[in-house]
Length: 396
Image (cartoon, rainbow, N blue to C red; front, side, top):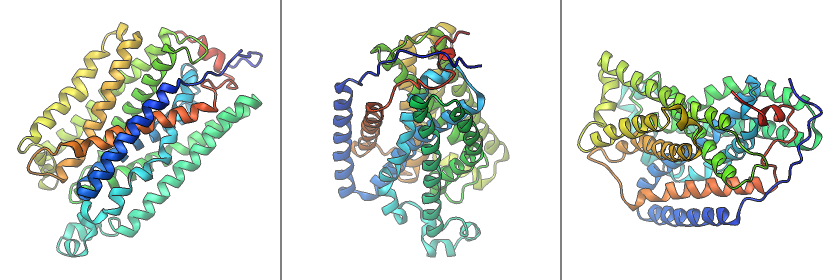
């Protein structure tokens, strides 16, 4: 039920200039490092480009997923946070630019692009109708066009509702969200296979798309949580966020930390149990040399630490604890993608130096700038949403 007579005396507040300045600094530093590293070592920069692009895509695309999910489920508590996910979802427009280094060096990164290599391998010949350069670029363009179209529809109707207060726009977005869901499932699987899994084109895993989805959704919720806490700390919402709102975010962080751990273990366990060479070699390469420390660190940092951070009920309501957990989860999500990608570049051991600093800084800066740019002319609350009053008054 909605309250059609409810009107909020809302005064839009500007994001502090220091946030934009921080975004400019991080973006500038990151861009300098990326450009210099590309000039010196384009192949290594291409691999880092895959990591940075996948990280940015995961937050942008899964934020769009959260928007659609809210409309389909008719969720109430999350309405006050929806503008955050709408702003973050705009990151999907920047990802193709981040991807340029690996797109321009596709032959250095993906060995299935070499005809002579494919011709000598029966597995690659079998996969060549899908894994070929032309079809790769067609898929790349197609998935982004689809995501952009749904972004414009879902966020456009939401923003339009601020001025029209037309409740049918909510129903319309619920319908579009329902259409988006199966398309989203297919396209995120395509992206994860094309960008990450095909780095080892002879590897087989039927659960990899779900693995990428689980980590990406956790990262998107973490980014939303961090932004919500920071906006509330600076009194920018125009309302006071309640402990029950925070508890809902904390519960999602905790739930999907467990879900990621379950999927990660399931993928490993099934491959270990079957003991098929075409599957096990992928994990073996991440257990050789000092890569084993990165693999062990993934278990500790990606699962155990955030699990402990937000295990208790009070911690799920504590904004400071949630902010710390959100930052940690975003860091370990980047760590996770690094673990997926870089063993393909440096099989002999860990590859980490100043080359790897460019894209994390660039991602951080672009996320801040995108958020502040979108917030400049848009309300931080969806004031026309018929469920807004219920969301503001939400309690468990």
